Structure formats: structure tokens, C-alpha cells
Amino acid sequence: MNKSVNPGLDPATLEGLIQLVKKTYHGQIVLITQNFRVVQVERKENFNPEDLLDRNLGLKTEGLKAQALKDKITQALKGLEFGQVILVFKKGRLSQIERLQKERFSDTQGLSGDGI
Image 1 (tube, rainbow, N blue to C red):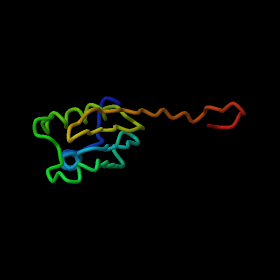
Image 2 (cartoon, rainbow, N blue to C red):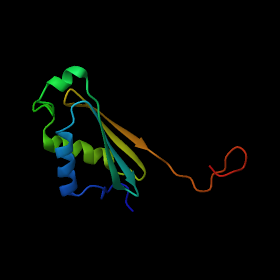
Image 3 (spheres, rainbow, N blue to C red):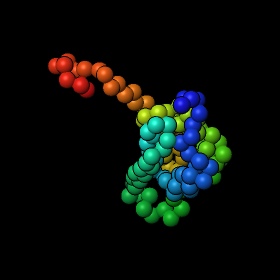
Image 4 (cartoon, helix red, strand yellow):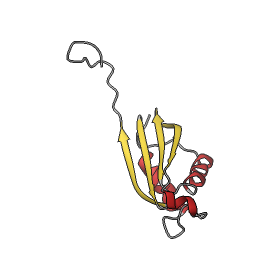
């Protein structure tokens, strides 16, 4: 498979992810990939006590626009065979995107001669 192609998120799934993003104020959304496809989405939401009093939690409109966010997510997933893309939110704004790429080695042996 061509590693530059990203079949991991179809447009409908990407739109659903944007709706999930809009509900995240403090926390993370983790996209887990296997064989170049997103196979799992995890969401962790953190609350500060004062946040519980604010009824308007969610993505700030002055932050990234939906299309720009879609582009950033798609770019982060591009070529990621095994790993994670982590979207980190603070006060309703995307503060960072982390990309964790895993490499799998089937014929590597450990220090004691066992497989890893």
C-alpha cells in the first residue's frame, strides 16, 4: 500500500470527529491506527472545578475553522500505518497535535534471544 495515501478517515467519519472536537474543552482525542486505518477513537475530558459552572464549554469559534482542522488531522494521519494521533485541547482550543508512529519488527530478537 502506498504510504502517502490515507484511507483512514472517510468524509462522514471525519465530520463526526469534528462534532466530537466541538464538545471537547479540556482533554484529548486519540485516533488509533492499524494498517493505515483509524480503528479506534478515544476521548478523555478533564474538568477544572470552575469549568463546571460554565455552561458554554466547547470549541471556541475564534480558533481553527472546521476545514483547517480537518486538513491538520488528515495530514497527521497520512502514512501512519501503526500508531496514534493525539489532539490536545485547552480551554476549548486545539493546543497541539501529537503523532506517535509505531514500527513493528517481526524477526527481531531481544537480549535473551527471545522475540520482542
